[in-house]
Length: 555
Ligand SMILES: [Zn+2]
Ligand SMILES: [Zn+2]
Image (tube, rainbow, N blue to C red; front, side):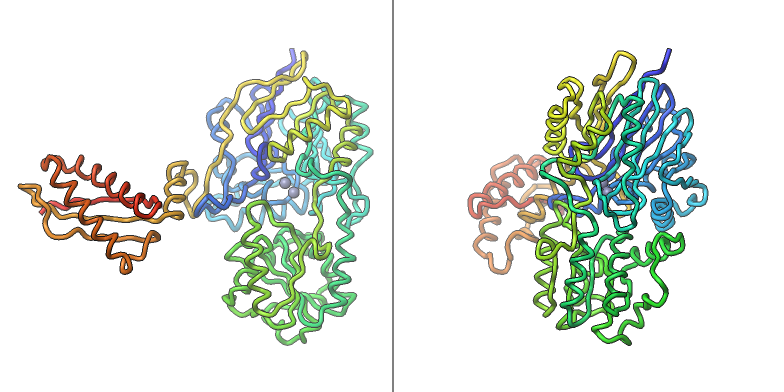
């Protein structure tokens, strides 16, 4: 009897980010992608979020044979160090560029220093068929906003499971490699039991423009710019860097690369032959001042407003040696990821304040989405002709819309699985159905701590950020419990104490009244009551709810 297949989505469903899926056949398993997500504005102090993969630790009976990567974006590879730390002997499988990006990421990770050489990355070329344990997986080339992207056709006894990866159908891609339409059509002739399709742009009608429209936009920007040109994009967006190089060559400019991660990636991609920028077009960042402004292009990191990246530092005048000069043209060649809009706008405003010219979408077509719109999703389903559809890579609204589109192309309602992280799907000879739910939430990474801050810490940070805190320290007599002297009051982020005499004297009277009205032997109860009374009084007076702490010192 053939074994049951289980699809366990651990991330990327119900959100844009931290994509990770487990495929099981009996006790054998593979993982597709291990991504991170960037924190929302109200997740104070969180660096990034990784998928909750405690399920894999609980299933100690499961043999993981490999982690397969669709492409090199952070929302697909970013959590690799956290996953291989737990499973160091599981080999990784990726195309050349993705392997390079994974290697850079693993070597730069602080978690893995002692074991990085133990990790095996198997590089394959799109179109290759992989045998990963008992899983036979056919990779196929897809176009997106980064080169070397693949989707996977996974063999099962019940037909193929097709995972699209991130894609759009770009018929004029910058590297000339078109999507593998033939393979997709061929899959349909062999029978596809389940399609797991990218849903990111399910709310956009029509077709997503080709990456090559950016060439024309760059050409216009380069023709007009009088001074230096500074282009901000993702550190991993190798194809965009190539497009900049073409424009630079045409307009007689040379390129310098600023930002550690981008320099590392450019170096790696040139070594692998994926990025063909001739030596004479590149200049060292330290020598960039020797060029005239009209001959200079600088690639910078920080297009998402990240405070520690080059763009934010320049906009604040805090970069070690790059300063904004009047006449500079800054180009933001990326869309803000949801949640980053505010920080990106702040950067733009600060650059304008310093006299720079700033160009961003939609002022110019300097960025297009890497994800297919509704017509491309429809085309994908028509090519692959899946029996069942599982929308992936999107917020719930995107998954729903993708599901509706599936009905429009003729997939029966009961064969469409709009589910969120942790909902397991089972496939056997009878068909596809929902199984149990496993954990699929957030794990916050804050500095070196992984998963040590949860909901309660996050709520505290939210209160502290919104209303601040007030600390009241009272001295009481050890024997009698009587108050000694006046309490000491410390506050941050609530009111400026020097200007708040009246409020302070009200805090004092609450202390006196509360202490005199209660049994003097129980300082624990008095402390809680005092905290509550001060909180109430502050809310009545100020309509704010700072966090209130009281401390009793017995003397
Ligand atoms: Zn992507
Ligand atoms: Zn993605």
